[in-house]
Amino acid sequence: MQAGDLPDDIDALKALVLESRAMIAAMAAAHKGAEALLANLQIELLRLQRAQFGQSSERRAHLIDQLQLSLEDIEGDIVQNSMAAETQAAAAQGAPIQPAGSRRQPKRGPLPAHLPRERMVIASPTSCPCCGSKKLCKLGEDITETLEIIPRKFFVRQTVRERWSCRACEKIMQPPAPFHVIARGRAGPSLLAMILAGKYDLHLPLNRQSEAFANEGVAIEVSTMADWVGACAAALEPLTQLIRDHVFAAERIHADDTPVPVLAKGKTRTGRLWTYVRDDKPFGGKDPAAAIYYYSPDRGGAHPRSHLADWTGLMQADAFAGFAALYAPERKPNAIIEAACWAHGRRKFFELADVARKKRSLARDARITLSPIAVEAVKQIDAIFDIEREINGLPAEQRRAVRHERIKPLVEALHAWMIAARARVSAKSAIAKAMDYMLKRWPAFTRFLDDGRACLSNNAAERMIRPLAVGRRNWTFAGSDRGGERAAAIYTLLQTAKLNDVDPQAWLADVLARIAALPASRLAELLPWNWKPQASA
Image 1 (cartoon, rainbow, N blue to C red):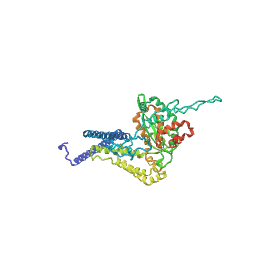
Image 2 (cartoon, rainbow, N blue to C red):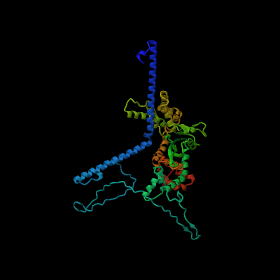
Image 3 (cartoon, rainbow, N blue to C red):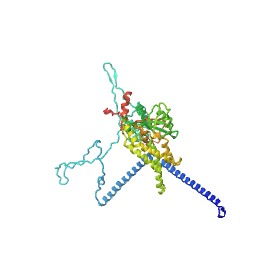
Image 4 (tube, one colour):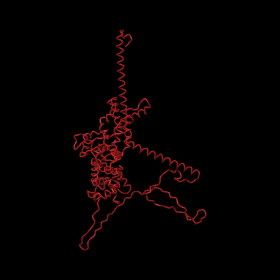
C-alpha cells in the first residue's frame, strides 16, 4: 500500500493500524508454532536415531569389546616396539640381549594356589666355574612360576560287563547295561554337558563346536550333535518342569520377553522368548531364585495368558498391551496385580535429556537448552532410587515402613509436579508421551509403596533376557519353532543354575549321569539349590 492510498479519516487509520497489528500477531504466533513444531520434530528425529544407533546394553557391550581389542593391540605394540629397540641397541653395542623379564615388572598377584605344581629343576653345576673346586654347598633356590595348560583330552571310557555262569545250575549272569542319556548313543554326560553349555551359555553354534572338535582330532557331525541336544532336552524335561512349578509357586514374579529370529522358508520371522523370574532376595526371602522361559512364534497376548493361566499374584513387568487381560477384574481365577517398572518410566525421560544434551553438543550452541522437564524428572526419580538401594534385602514390612516414611512424599511431589508440567506441553510432544506413560499407569507405579515385596524396577527379568540378546549376535536365528522351545527349556536350566551360583556345565554333567537312576520322588535333589556333586553326596 502506497502513502497516497491511506485514508485521511483518523478512525479509518486507527482501524487499519489495529488490523495490521492483528495480522502481525497472527503471523508471529504461527511462526512460533512452526518453531515449536520444528524443535519437536528435531528432538523426535534424534530420539529415533538414538534408538537405532545409540548405546543400548548390547551395543555398549560390543563397544566395550572393541575397546578391549584396541587396548590389547596397543599393549602388544608397546612391548613389540620395546623389544625391537632393545635388540637393535644390543646389536649395535655388541652386548647380549636382556631377557624379557628385565624389561617390565608389572604388578601382579601370585598364580592360583589350588593349581597343581610341576617342579622342573635346572641342572646345577658340579664344580665351581671360578676355581674348579667340587666343594659346593646349597644356599637356597629361586622359583619362577609360569602358567601353562594341557589341551582338553578326549578319551574313550570302556564299561566292561563280565558274564558268569553257575557250575551248579548253569545259569548265566551279567550286570545290567549302564544308563545312556541317548539310547545307543556314544556320548558321555560330560561331553553332552559341554555341548549344551557351549551352545546355550557360551553361544557357540554347533557348527563351530564341530569344527573345534575336528581340529582336536575328534570328528563329530553337526547332525549328530543336534540329535544329542534334542535327546538331552527330553531327558531333562522333568527337571525343567520342577523349576517351572517352583517359579509359579511364588506370590510375586517378574516378566519380560525378547525377539528371536526364526528361520522360515529361506527367510527369518520374529518369534519371542518369554521369561518369568522368581527372586525373593530383595525383600529378604529365603526361597531360591529361578527363571523359566517359554517360546512363542509371535508376541500375541494369548501366550502370556496361557503361561499364567493358573497363576495369581503380584507381577512386575513393562506396559505391554498383551498383559492387560491378566489385570482385568473379571479374570479367572483372580486378577493378577500389576506393578510397573520405574526403570522403564525413567528411561523415557533420560533418553530425551540425553538427546537434548547431544543436540547442544553437536550444534555447539549454548542457546539450545537441555529439556528442563526431562532433566527434572530424572533427578526426582533418581532420588527415589537412591533411597530404595538402602533398603534392598530388608524384610518386606521394614521396606514398606521406610517407603511410607521417606519415599511416599517424593512420589507424591513427583506426581503433582508432573501433572502441572503436563498441562504446559503439547500433547504431541515426546515429553508429553513420556509423562503420559507414567500418569496413565500411576496406580501400578505406586503399588510398591504398599507392598514391601515389590521392587522398584523389573531388572530381575531384564537380566535374564540379556544373555539371549547377546547370544543372538552369534547364533543369528533359531532353526525352527521346536528349536525355540528346546532353547527355552535349556535356558531355564542354565540360567537357574547361575542364579544359584552353580557352575551350569558341571551341574548338567552330574545331572545327566544321575537323572535316570533317581525315582520321580527324588528328582528335587538335582535342582540347583539342592544339588550336591555325586562324589560328595
